Image (tube, rainbow over all chains, first blue to last red; front, side, top):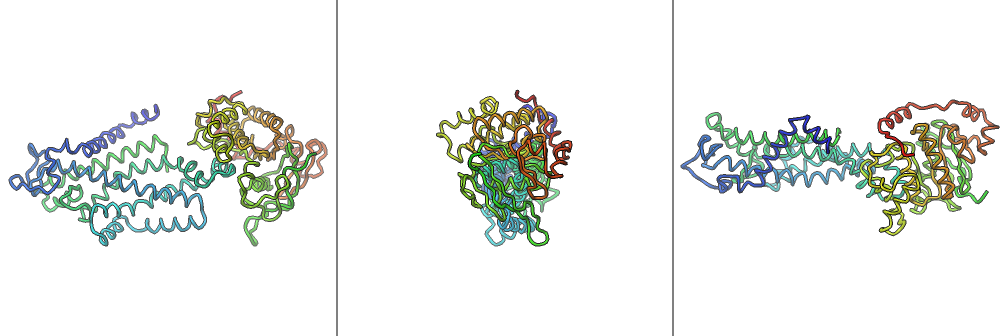
Length: 277
Length: 272
């Protein structure tokens, strides 16, 4: 615990990361109380105030149909976070289990699982997501499905590499000699030793999932209007640069804040948990 | 001598096939009496570790049989066979899971073999720790909080937790510094007397087993070239190779040096 604080204190950037992520999470959770115009997260039209530059009460300006950008960004954070959490909640257990099984069991299991992983890793992530979204309908659920499909292989490979090292450790041999089940050796002995690296990667990935999801919706393949999404907001405003700069700059900054924050925390966690894999 | 607890009949182990095949152990036969301490001595590559792994059932012999109390052990061992033969490894830094408490590590053996009522197992863990000279409250600690010698005591307690009758000691002291080595050897000797254990003591260093082993088997290039009482081996070795081993100043390998440095970095004052 003392070491944790020492590392945090020695590295002001990790404190900045903590502040940025706290900002994002608080906005997302308390969006209903923070957003000045909660109704603007939906299909509201207010042509009297459309395309306004930042001014009170629209501190980030308004979009092309007169909705408050600040309110929409706050609700977009909620979507982004839910998306990140759902994607990781599905991708991480799948990837970790595959990595553990391949790394510990070896032989044909290892061969099949890791070649499958390689196939997924060899397809550029955005291309894979775009083809999935192309075949299926571009909805939020399918967006999560697409991002999940491209995310689990990274965990499989990470955990596979750690497991191959841990398998040679004496404590694994000791458990085997005692007669512990494979399940015990894999999930109770080896898995805890993979967790620092997995938790670090999850934190870093929260940022990257948000970024990829934004990229998808920027291309029109993710969250669909009128649901607010940072990527689609940037896309919608891009045509009106540089005159209506607030349409792109504020959603863009919002993406930056989230991704940068999670990255800084991930780096700090790597130091604290000592996961250098 | 009483009936053999362990009998190896013509045991061989080959790794690989064809021209690349390595004959790690070549037709080795010997009996181990219950309560005996048999030292298996040889240089690295002599096949002593391969032999230990076969006795432990980590892999089966290519040919030949290993019998425990008259029953030939199958390639896939039953839990009862695993319970009977346990292991203490060389490196106490790696043999305890850093993410599990000492108590959880010892408890595993009790849970797997159903030793004691579940409610009593915490007390059994405490008693085991006291038996190896550690306080019962060490159960709550993580391995990182223990010195090399203390960890090796925990590893010994784990081997006892199964109520094993045969313990394979694979260089159990070579990663420890000399003073701790002597204490661990005394502990092993005392436990053997109290519990009536049988030891297979694997080492490259004859001087370590001089005081603890009843008999010594000398291995060279996969063959057992000599077996006899400790006194006979030391006073009248029949093989030149054995004479060389006896006269050799204990050699420390690079691995062990690195291990000792690592241990020294981790080691706090060892428990008396």
